[in-house]
Image (cartoon, rainbow, N blue to C red; front, side, top):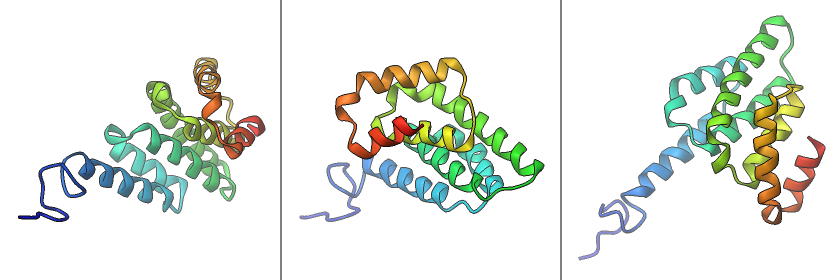
Length: 146
């Protein structure tokens, strides 16, 4: 008897590890759809225990996009607070960062105008050098721009 999608067992698309993948994808969508720095920050705080390195990278990218249109002192404070939350996660997760996460994080920090602490920059730089042969042209360009 064929179980098809959703039949459980973990061997196909319906159960086991793939359920976590869908949750990861769903959270990434929520991050990308954030319409304000405050909404993004609240999502990070609420879901920080389930954030993977991909979520952290996506949130950095979204923060940079949102920061381009945020004005005023309160928005600058929200951007700074949110960036600190993300830098904390990045320090914990940098060993799992792939080329896209490294490029996105460095691009976002440069776009925001945030000077990451020396330890985080050194960790991301080491990881970039170790995986340089895996970077695609866009990731190289974003990293060099940053």
